[in-house]
Image (tube, rainbow, N blue to C red; front, side):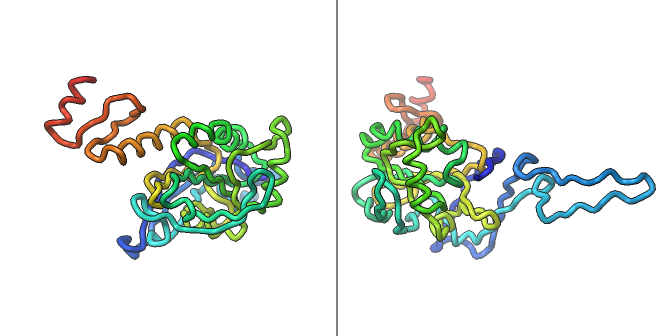
Length: 267
């Protein structure tokens, strides 16, 4: 069972066509609760304190995800394509990301493991419950973890009161090879699980939004919906931009020093 850990939200993006060859690292600190503290016997006052092993002392150092920039997807560029097994409607199916190009927007989100705590309550079932709203926006939702399709199936077949998912209205993808998590820059190498990454991909297969939370922090379905609506609005109205917190029906802005004054005068 995956433990969940502290706040650290990052936007990670890159592309092979324009990215430099250098590397970067982003520190993602884990709390003391992620790994149990190392216990030592009381030492005699005349003896030096016992030496603690540093092999798992994550509570005292930041975990750094290091990856070549050219290996990570960049907002504004094509999403890495993949084909994988998934569970949908309690059946095993194949899902290929590129099958949605020209047809639908995609909300692609990653979570660490099946049968964990944040996942069913705040995210997976919440996305399922609001799936009809995303359908109205011509958007498909895809969930991904490194679990097998058999684990996904068992979780779906477990009712919510028992910590399961019950019926889901979208596919859960199996990334047992970890290749999808790696290609989207969310894999934690030494743990072999994915951070809570979320990507909004438009109908052209281009990543338009990405956010990555550390393990303990669930994502907001409301904010995902709002961001998707803002994205679709500016794509339909390319001469306008959406200010912070914009929601449908609210005033947008013109990206022009003079024309934007109309917006600022109204707020």
